[in-house]
Image (cartoon, rainbow, N blue to C red; front, side, top):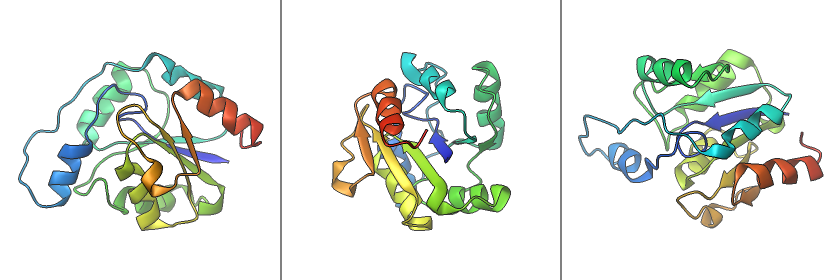
Length: 160
């Protein structure tokens, strides 16, 4: 399997759902809040031996600063004008990687993460860590309360 992981809400301790949705709806917002505070369990991602790409709602400069500061040694897709819920990050991801959507799992924490993947290709498996928001309305492949239980579930399903 291949993994696309949203940094906001999965790694970074921040919920941007309302702000990003308002931007999507056309509300002029100039600054998206930024943090480098992380969830303690994010390092469970390091147990995944397959390819991982990070997806970011931030521009390239901000994403690069965050990735460097936190020493996240993964390639990333930054926001180039359209972020969640938009298929644009996935268009860029699949353009760069030539991955097959049937072999990709997206790890997110917001309904917008699920919608973004589905806007691109409904065959992408989307899993949700419910840190701030309830994702069940959008029928994710898996729902978990934290990264550790998510990794354990993926192992049981032989996706890791």
